[in-house]
Length: 136
Image (cartoon, rainbow, N blue to C red; front, side):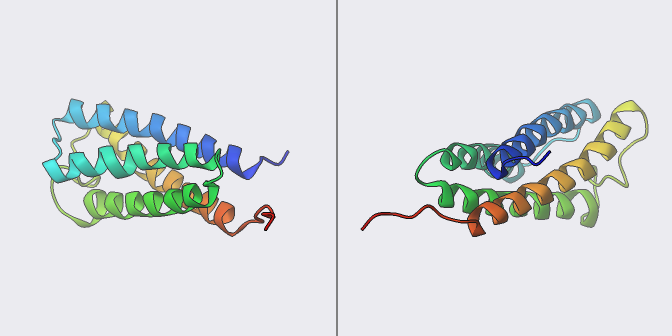
């Protein structure tokens, strides 16, 4: 069974948001607070932008939606790698405390990275795909 590219993008964004929600709960349970910048980035780029992209995909502005999906998912992926892998601190998945919520944190971080990669790929496919002919 082959999924329509727009449906695949929608599926990725919905699952991404569910995993992001679980990751946020793990953040709270572990006492890992976000800075003002991080909170704004999460709200605007990681959550809102892919949602807006999905809405745009259902309009005559589908190309803009695909582009927004690519940019937001790639930015989210970079953000996650920087804060969960490269920078030291409580948000680093290799330094998080053990226990149930530590495991949830360590599983949802890479899961988000995979979903963000899939979301970017879906957006690229949609952006590069065939465009309907427009009458002059």
